[in-house]
Image 1 (cartoon, rainbow, N blue to C red):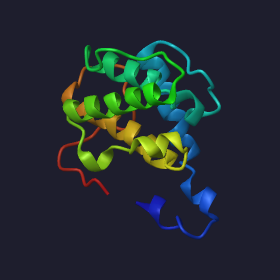
Image 2 (image 1 turned 45 degrees about the vertical axis):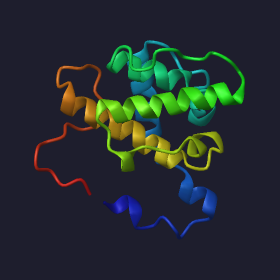
Image 3 (image 1 turned 90 degrees about the horizontal axis):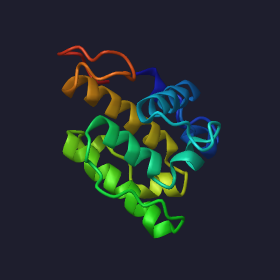
Image 4 (image 1 turned 180 degrees about the vertical axis):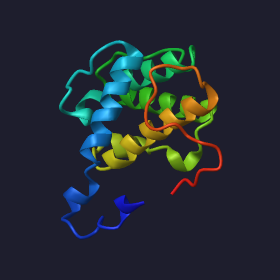
Length: 147
């Protein structure tokens, strides 16, 4: 719970930056699940922005979640990938408040929310598919507080 205490003391940019360890875990998990390295390992925003890796991620977890992944460089096609990914996460059982908005990823201003969403997807996977490997994050124990 300590993550939220000092959010507003830093400059705006710093407070919006996600925790480096969470970013690294998310990146490693996405690469492990999809079986392919991210386009830019040091820049999660650049790597995920076109939505392709995200769609591959949810398809690896729940095959057929995103029927068609657009490899196009056109922004509206990339946004479509991202919104298809979010729809698929919702269908998979993630709760609305755990999702990020396409703008969070596109403008790069909500990367904390994006990383949080990936981690919460990891927990949802453990919950729904206990045998799924690799796992992201700690095992969710029933009755644990979600603070």
